[in-house]
Length: 484
Ligand code: ADP
Image 1 (cartoon, rainbow, N blue to C red):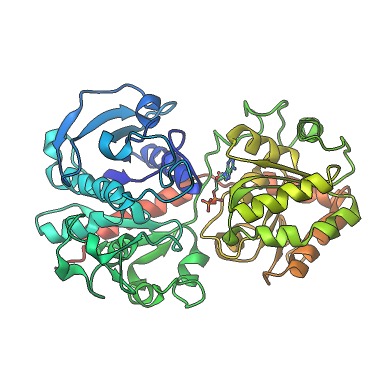
Image 2 (tube, rainbow, N blue to C red):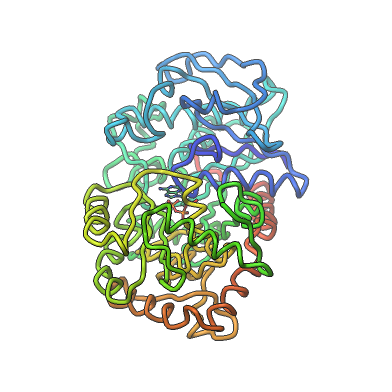
C-alpha cells in the first residue's frame, strides 16, 4: 500500500514527545512489510537542514494566502524513509519550537501553520501525479493534521482513504470560530456535525468526525476516551464512532533503544551481561552530582513536566524517599511550578535529588539505563514510551494503572509470574509511595534480578502493531465514510 503520513513531529528531525518517536519508527516497520510509506512534515528551521538527499522542490503556490510554499522531497537521515518537507518560510522559518515561541507561548498563527500542513496533504492526496506518487491512504497524526479529512470530504472528489491517530486527546487544536475562513473552511461546517467543539473550531474534532477510521495508541486508552472521565468532551462522538475506532499499542524503535549498542551510554550491556548497567549507574550518579552508591535505589524520570504526568505525586513523595536513602533523577521541562519544585528539592537534598531542566536525548538514554526504577505516575497516558524503554533497559517501571501503562506493565505483586513492574491505581501520593516502597522491598534481592530479566526479555518491537495498522488501512480503503 502507498501511505502518506502527516505529522508535526518526526524523530530525529523534530521531537517534543512520543509522537515523533512513532512517526519516525512506524514507516520503517510498515516498509518491512512491503508498504511504501512517506511522511509529510513542516519545514521548521532545522528540519530542512537535517533532512538528507534533498530533491527538486515542487512549487505549491500560495495555498492559504499566507506565503509561497513548496514541497521538498528528501530522506529521513539514518533511514530509507522518504519524506516531503513542506517549505513555507512565512510560517515555519523562525527560532522556537514547533508549537511554542521562544517565550513559551503558543504561536499566534498555529491555525495557519497546521492548516497548511493538512491542506498540502490533501492536495497531494488528490493530485499526487505532479509528484509522480499518490497515496492510497492518508494517515494523519493528532490535531495538527486533523483538517486533512475535512478538506478531502469537502472537495468531494475521488480521494484516498483517511485514518487519524490520536496520540493525546487532551490537545484538541481549538481556535476561535472567526478563523474558519482563514483556514479555508465554509461556515456551514461549524456545527456539531462538523468541526465545532463547545463553541470552538477544533482541528482534532474535524479529524475525528471526518476520517474513515480512527486509531489511538493503546487498547485501554481507546476504551477510556469513550467515557466522561477521559473523553475531554469528545466521548459522545468517540462512542458513536466506536465501530471505526481501534487501539493499537505503540512499539519502540529497538535500534535506537538498544542497551547493547547505544552510543549515549558509557558501557554496553544486555540481559545476559548486566555488569555494564552497574557502571552506567555509577557514571550517572557522578554526572548528576549524586553520591556514587550502588546500594541506593535510583528512581529516574524523563518527562514533560505537566499535570498529566503526575509530577506533583513525585514531589509529594520526596520526604518519604529521603527517609529511605533513595535517589531521584528527573530530566524534564514544562510548567514553571514543577521546575521550581524540582529545583528546590535538588537544592535542599543534593545527596538524594538531581534535576536537569531542558530537553536532552542522550541524558534520557543514560537515565533509562542507569536508574533502578523509572517513574511514570501519569493521570492519563495514551500509551507512554518511557515505561517500555525502561523495561528494555532493565530498569523496573513504577506506573499508574491507566491507558497504555496498564497495557504494558503488569504489577509484579498482583501477577508474580508475569509481572515486570509496580503499578498503582489511585492518583494519590500514598498510592504511588506504596508502589515505590514495594519496589524498594525487591531492590537488591534475587526477586529484583528475576523481574529485571523478565522485563528485558519482552518484545516491544513494532512488528505486531504494524500488522494491525495494515488491517486498519485495508478497512478504511474498503469502507470509506462519506459525510458531505
Ligand atoms: P508524551 O508523548 O506524552 O510526552 P511519551 O512517553 O509517549 O510521552 O513520550 C515521551 C518521549 O519524549 C520519550 O521518548 C521520552 O524519552 C522523551 N522525552 C520527554 N521529555 C524529555 C526530555 N526532557 N529530554 C529528552 N527526552 C524527553
